[in-house]
Length: 177
Length: 387
Image (cartoon, rainbow over all chains, first blue to last red; front, top):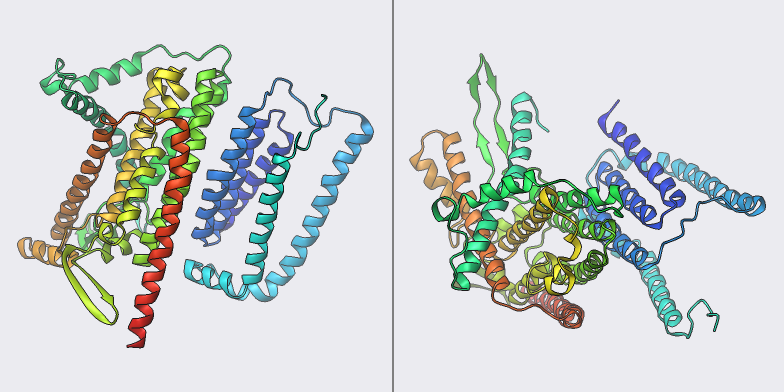
C-alpha cells in the first residue's frame, strides 16, 4: 500500500474517533480537546493531499484560535454535574439518535455524489501535485470570489447577531427574577 | 526522508540534534537570565558553584530530577500530566522548521566499497514550502499547555492564570500575524529561504522607474520599521515575559498556571517558554535582520571565499554552513538578551492596559502598516510599469 493511502486511513480513523469523542464525552472540556484532535486530523489530511498552506491555516484558525476560545469558555462554566449522553427518556433518546443518523445519511449521499464529480473532473488534475499559495489566492479572488464574499457576509451577520443577543437584557435566557 | 541509508540516517540525527540543542540551551539561558538580572540590579547572582556559577545549572537540573513526584489531590490526572508536554512540543515543532544556515552540499564520495551520490542537507529539521504559516501555526498551539495546566490543577490561581494567558496570547497573536503580512508583501514569499535570500547585499529598490541604492544592509527592519516594533511587542506578550507576564504574576496569583507544578514538570514549562523565546528570536532575525546572512555581503561571495581556502568542495560547504550558523546564533543571542534586559527593566502591565495595547493600539497600527505597504508597492510598481 502506498504510504499516503496508509496515512489517509490513519488520519481518517483519528478524525472519526475524536469526532465521536466530541459528541459523546461527558465532560465539556474533554469534548473540546477531542475537537482539537479532529482539527489536527483534518489539517493532516490537507497536508497529505499536498496543500500545506490550507493545512497550516486550518491549525492556526481552528486549533490555535477557535477551539482555544471554546476551551476558555468551558473553563468559565461551573461544571459540577456531569451529563451522560442518551440517559433520558426513550422517546427523546430515539430522536437524538435519529437526527445524527439522518445527517450521516445526507453526508454519505453528498460524498458519493462528489466522488462522482471527482472521478470525472478532478482526477486528471490531482495527480499528487502541490497546490501553491498563489494559485489558491488567484482562484479565491477570481473564480470563487462570490462564495468568498458571501461567507464574509455570513460571518458579519453572525457577529451582529451575537452582539445584539449579548446586549439585550437577559440574553437568550429570561432569568427567574 | 532520503534516497538511501546515509541520507536518512543523517536526517534522523539532525531531527534529534536540533531538539536536543533547544533543550540544552535552556539551562544556559536560565544562567544568563540569573547572572544578567544580577548585573542589571547590581547584585552578584549565582557565583558559588563552579567557575562563574556555571555548575549551578547542573545542580539545578539534578535538584529538579530528584524532587518528589506528586500531583494535587483534586487535580484531573490525565490533563495535569498532559499540560507540561503540551507546553514543550509546539516550541520544538516550530524550531524544527527554522532554517539555521545555508544547506550543506556533499559531493559524491567512496566509502565502504561503494559510491555515495551527491547529497544536500538543509540546516533545519524539515523544509516546508510555507514555512512562515507553519511556524506561526505551531507556536500558536503553545497556549494549550497553559490552559490545560490551569484547568487540570483544580486551583483557583492556576485557572486565573490560564484564563489570562489564553486571552492575552490570542489577542496578541492577531497583531503578530498582521505585522508579518507586511514583510511577506515586501519579499513576496512564504518561504524562509527566499526571504533570507531577498535580504542580501545593499539596500536597493525600484522607485518611480529608477533604482535607488542606500548604504544600509538590505534588511527587513529598514523596509518595515513599524512592523518590526509591533512584532517585538507582540512576541513579548506571546511568550508571557515581563512586562506581559500576567499569567504568572507572582504578586497576585502565587505562580499563575504553574502554581501546582514542581520538579521536572515545572522544568518542562520553562523549556517551553525558552523554546518560544528562541523561536521568536529566530523569526525576528529572519524577517528583519536578514536571517543567517552576513550584512552587505551575499552568500555567493562567502561561498567563493571559503572555496578558495578549502580545496575540497564538501569541506568548503560545511565551513560556510558553520560560519552562517554562528552568525545566526549571534543574532538570536542578541535578541534573547533584549528579552532579558526588558524583563529586568520594566514593570508589569495592568490587565486592562494590556488589552487596550493589544486591540486598540497594535492591531490598528498593524493594519495601517499593511495598507501602507501594499499601496506603496502598488504605486511604485504601477508607475514603474508606465515608464
